[in-house]
Image (cartoon, rainbow, N blue to C red; front, side, top):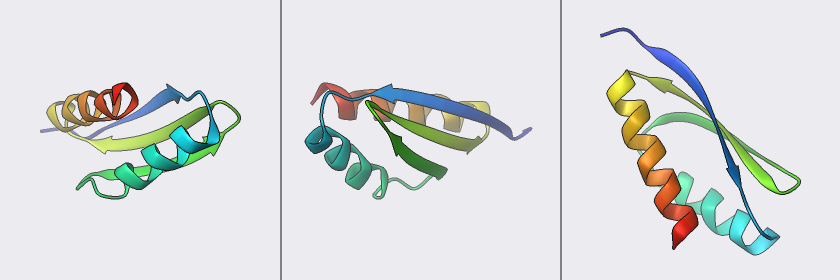
Amino acid sequence: MARVKRTINLPVTDTGQMLEIMKKLGTLEADLEAESRLGAIRIYASGTEEQIRTLELKVKEFRVK
């Protein structure tokens, strides 16, 4: 399978939520880099299409909780 790169922008409401999500991102077994910006986290991910889709779903669950 071909590897792809994707950027995921995740809006956050405050610093506490940002820190919580960044900690959870550190527990994932994925090829990613994340940086925090004012009001958002930008995630740079690479992998197969299926790996990226799975990662996007997990990340979106982090924000809901």
